[in-house]
Amino acid sequence: MSETNIVGKGDFILMDYIAKIKETNTIFDTTFVEEAKKAGIFKENNVYEPMLVVVGEGWVLKGLDEKLVGLEAGKKITVEIPPEKAFGPRDPSKIKSIPLRKFQQQKITPYPGLEVEVDGKLAVVRSVGAGRVQVDFNPPLAGRTLIYEVEVKQILQTPIEKIKALIHRRIPTISLEKFEVEFLNKKVTIKMPEESLSFDRLQLVKRGIVSDIQKFFPDVDEVVFVDRYVRKKEVKAGEAEPKPEQAVSQSKDK
Image (cartoon, rainbow, N blue to C red):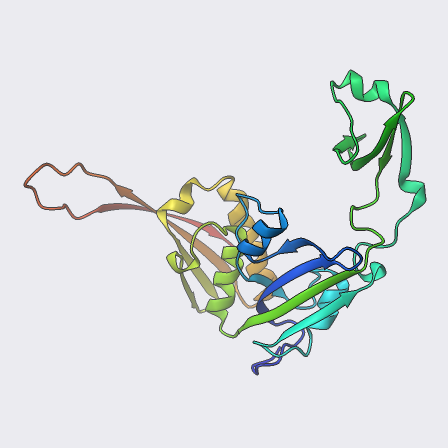
């Protein structure tokens, strides 16, 4: 891992990117909200910000992961990724013809471009006609050469920075600045902000955070979560704002 401005394998980096299909110059993914809106791929629930990547861990496409090593932080580059290092070549055997009645039985009206689930597998409808529906089980970007415009914004250096980034990866809708992290004597303590306590499937999220920390910090023996619940008091006219009372609970994972 590197302590310079050059990315090394195993580094924790934050990167921005715009991803395009080479043949059509169509943007299919990005970390920039305005680019997503212009391309018509904006999703309300997505968080648009530099993406955390641990280089060499397969968190991004193989062809991109390989190109990250040796990049200079703050420098923009363009990476071309062939199909074999992206979503693979198109496989004609994964295009199937299915009776239309199978969809009708599930009250589905198929049309070209519709994403469907067939026997537990995701597919895209290619054509409909003569009582048959042609569906494609290939990944939508299989066989495509991809272009990534990438900029490494930051190489994280300290354990606290890295742990906070791992937390934010699991709980992206809450500012990482609201999480307090202490790392002392092989023990990590994470103080959770109150708004995180209503996060969907929080216990599973915590387990994921613990798994991440134990993977990248093998010297950590214990992870402690401190949950804070603040009692809300009604303030009457003319009264001073009361000091908040806190109820604190702890959960530990070893």
